[in-house]
Structures are given as C-alpha cells and as structure tokens.
Image 1 (cartoon, rainbow, N blue to C red):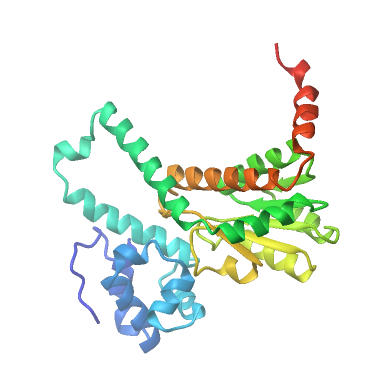
Image 2 (cartoon, rainbow, N blue to C red; image 1 turned 90 degrees about the horizontal axis):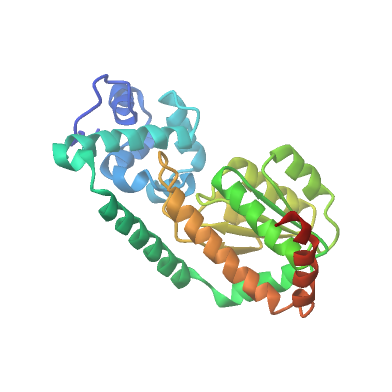
Length: 292
C-alpha cells in the first residue's frame, strides 16, 4: 500500500486519508488500486467525477462506490468532501500566520475580478458554435421547455426560464425533483429538457434527463465535466468552465460560467425567433405597473 506523504488529521479515522490507512489491510485488490490512486493523485481526484476516477483506475463506478461505503461514507461525493478537508488542512498548516489572515480587501476584490475574467475566457474557448445553434433551434420552436437543477444550478435554471418566458417561450424551472419528474413526464412532442449540473453528477438532475429520454423528448446538459453521468442522457451538451470544489462549491466560477453560457444561448435563440422583439415589448409592458 502506498505510504502517505502528508500529515494525517489528529484522529486516524477522522478524514478520508486516515480512513484509507486504517482500512488498508482489509481492502481487496481492486479497492486498493482505487485507494492508491486517490493517495497519489489527491489534488486532482478531489475535483474528478466518479466516472473520471473509475476511468483513470480502470475499474467500474460500482467499485468506487464500494470503497466509499467501506470507508463509511454515504457515497463518492461525501468522500470527496472529506478528502478536500484533508487537503485544506494540509494547505492551512503550510501557510504563514500572515497568509492565513488573508489579503487586504482591494487585493481580494481584484483577485475575484481576475478569477471571473479567466472563467469567462475559458468558457468562450469551450463553446461549440454548432451545438449552440442546434440547441437554439430546438428552444426557438419548442412548445415547452423544462429546466432542472439543484442548489446553485437551480437558481440559474430559474434565471434562464425567466429569460425564455420574456420572448414568448413557455418555460419552467424546477428545483423540487418530484415536481420536475411530473412535469417532464407530461412534456408534449417537441418539448425540451435542460439539465444544469456543474459536476455532471447530481443524481436528481441526471435522473430527470434519463426520464426525459425515455419519454422521447430532446435533452440538453450544461456541465463542466465531459466524463460525467449526465452526458450519457443528453442529446446535446454545452460545457462551462467551472472547476467545482466539494467544500466551497466554487460559487463564483459556477455562476459566472453558467450565466454567460446561457446569455450566449439566449442571443442565439433570438436569431431564430423573429417575433422576439414584439414579445419583449409585450412582456415589458405587462410589469409596468409593478414599478414606480
């Protein structure tokens, strides 16, 4: 078994790495291969999906899940949170007291703007114009569009549903997985389901696209991870440039990249709906009395 090269948490079984060391003697060969991969590539593994780790090690996703369960984690995501905490503790111990206090506010502000700019540049590089146009054509003539997402992605789903409604496209966003499933099962012919998941591994969102496929409607995934479960059930995929962090959820990167991608998609949809300008006037006038 590979020896750990960085300090363990105070309790030998309190973190992911500590639990691996504790269970090392009882791991089967396949589980040991996964454990060794995690130890050797912890910094990258913490950002990978279960699909990517399985491919890297040459095992099934079920094997990854078995290791997580053997280490007393509910699943791979819970394991990654613990692993991220291990890595965070290591980084924290290596910082000076001045670095731990943090930079001054102007410096932190500049850093955030630079981070957002990099995310937008990276998202632009990932954009596939052909897929974008194909999705735009689908949405422009869809009798109904359902959007589904959880957490931050659910907020962005609601934002885009509102954008589509303003140009006359019937659209709804669901953050309740039961309501989403019911709505998807009643979509008419030509309907579209858009699933947003930065990790591509959000169970409810993946299941919603799978349900949509079984119902014969078009499916679109918006994700950061090319090798993730959601892509198996998406007819088309648009990629964002947000590196998800299991502990912080990478809020800035995730929201920035998703919003910009959807704004570009919205602009493409406008090009396929000549009636959009008229609808924008109508919908703008509908809320005139709501403002002073």
